[in-house]
Every structure is written in C-alpha cells, then in structure tokens.
Image (cartoon, rainbow, N blue to C red):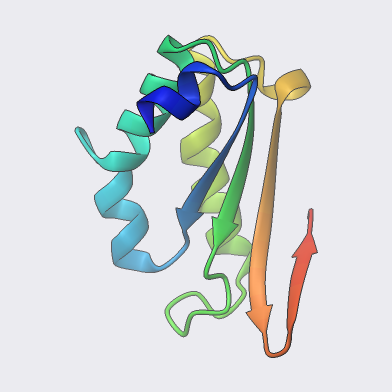
Amino acid sequence: MISGAAQADIGVLVISAHKGEFKTGYERDGQTREHVELAQTLGVSTLFVVVNKMEDPTVNSSKERYDEIESKMVPFLRSLGYNVKKLIAILHLEFFFPFFVLEKW
C-alpha cells in the first residue's frame, strides 16, 4: 500500500457499512483511520470514499446508515486537511446480482 500510495494523486477508500466492521475500522488506531492518514501523509490530495456493503442485512440499504458514516468521515477528513467540498466524493455501493449499483445520494 505504501509504495502505491506514494505515487498516487487520487485514492479510493472503501469503507464497509456493516455495523461492526465500520466501527472497528473507524475507532482509534483502526485501519480506516490509518489508511487515510497514510494517504494524506504521502500526498494523496483527492479521495473517493466508497461506502460498501450497503445491501448487508445489518444496513438494509439505509440512507440513515450512509448519513451516519458520512457524518463521521467528513469531520475526520477535514481535520487532516482535506478540502471535503472540492476534493472528496463520498459514494455508496450496493451489490445486486448480477449488477453493481453506484449512486450518489
């Protein structure tokens, strides 16, 4: 991850919407936080944040869950110096066999 991120201008951060998985990754010293901090340190100036597994039974394609994740990620990204309005897109992704559905609320 480090060698690839050191050469990147744009990063894609995939976050699980599953109830336990997001919490584990976002908590202090979680992998989600570490990856964002590392990308920012290595000069990745633009991030696409993808909220994955929205179809999971613990989430059930809930806009409230998406909003909850966005409300936690935006201040965190802003605190690291990312211009959230200009440089970051936060999208949700669901899997419905056989199609992937990508939509921004």
